[in-house]
Amino acid sequence: MRILVLSVSAGAGHVRAAQALCATAATELPQLDVIHQDLLELVPQGFRKLYGSGYIKLVERAPLVWAYLYQRTDHPAGDSLLSRFRRHVERLNTRRLEAEIERIRPDAIVCTHFLPAELLSRRIAQGLPTPPVWVHVTDFDIHGLWLHPHMAGYCVASGEVAARLAARGVAKENIHVTGIAIMPQFRQTPERSRAAAELGLDPARSTLLMMSGGAGVGDMEALVAQVAALPLDLQIVALAGRNEALLTRLQALAARHPGRILPLGFTRTVERVMAAADLAITKPGGLTSSECLAMGLPMLIVSPIPGQEERNADALLEAGCAWKAVDPAALAYKLELLMRDPERRQRMAACQRQMARPEAARAILERVGGLA
Image (tube, rainbow, N blue to C red):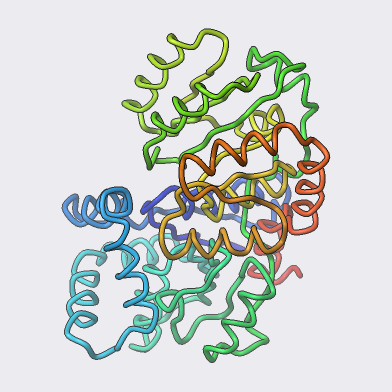
């Protein structure tokens, strides 16, 4: 059976979920041929820059604008001028998707972003031959842009998200609580001392992992500098993601704090970095949060993006899996409390393992492939 997974590289999470589905099929479900396509690779450069890079710049430089847009589009008026204009622009810039579907001829399609789901919903409404289309929501939240008619099913993070989907009119039998797809390697926790040694860290010292997301969003440099200046015996692993400029600045900062900061760029073995850490300071993206849950790595949340990340944070805080720092003073205070209280961190880790769904990618593929 051939499954086409469509993502959109507006933020890293949607692509990482798609990659997790492909990796899981390749290693565990050979009867499934899973192909990943980033929709933004099929559109003109101008639209790609607006939709992908534009999103990153907006949430970084004007988060209140993004918060307004998030709320405004949660219950969109389908016939409003803004909605009609948005649909027209998207349709003009995504025509190559039709050709790609014809070329691949999938038996089913999984969308890890709402844009391809919306485009395919219109295609089905027009009576065009289309395989079953599934939607995988990659946050602990549901937003109106993910809801479209003619979908074969929804795979969601939690029972609460499922209940909220049903309240919006989606048939309960079409909603499946699978968790958020993460890579297969997150199912096993590497031994801490070995993972630390691989990174050149001292296993006997407390280790803090600081992450800003795959695109390096946020003032990561200032955050690392603040933590490095605290009177705590910490070694800090600072992940810059794909942001080369940020990595260079972190390396300069590390030179001023010998033996205290280890800057890292993009890595495909983040599970080993997490295994070496005692606590993560991070933004609560859906994928990052799911990875931390699977690894039992307590989280101290900072600077959530308004909208989806704020709601992710709410879910994590309510479950006892994380704390949240609202400003630098709160960060310093809560970080010291957590680092001086290993039993509290152990309780948080236990809550995380209860909430974790490391088998999510396999569960999604089995559902879509008719293997469940």
